[in-house]
Length: 113
Length: 111
Image (cartoon, rainbow over all chains, first blue to last red; front, side, top):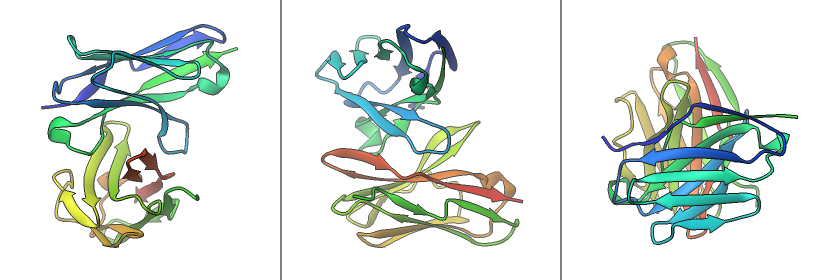
């Protein structure tokens, strides 16, 4: 079936390092992708998004890369801080998913100082 | 804006009881989504509405689950009868052209 998945369930980094979180998606018809951050006891919070007509988008300390050829999405966090510790999800929409977001299972990022 | 408001934040109920979860979307948002989150299955879409009309309920696990949106400012997700396997965090989200916003969730425990 169509799904969005992540390559690694956990990622541990040192404060100040750059972090890269990966995601593979299977629905080639998806045209909009979002990265979310979820802290304990809270709902998913928007980080950055990208449409299928782009291959890179930058925000503050974050960059999303989209490779449609291999259906791969990544989130890069520069100078990772302890406050970045959370679970990160990629989500896709479009195609058969229509307007609803379809989520991957998440990667837990742990930042040690 | 207060964001998407869900109530209650926590609910503990006994197996067989009826449970009703509530959601107030952001004013002006024309889509509303219900998701369920568990460790095993992650975030699963249950149902979503557009302009108060259910569009896709294929994610609703079984007939024990029902959702309504009587008006643009209120939606409910009802489980009757509840079972221990329904224990999860249930999120409501609303969407406009500006994007999706999630509530803080309702943690449901069925004992």
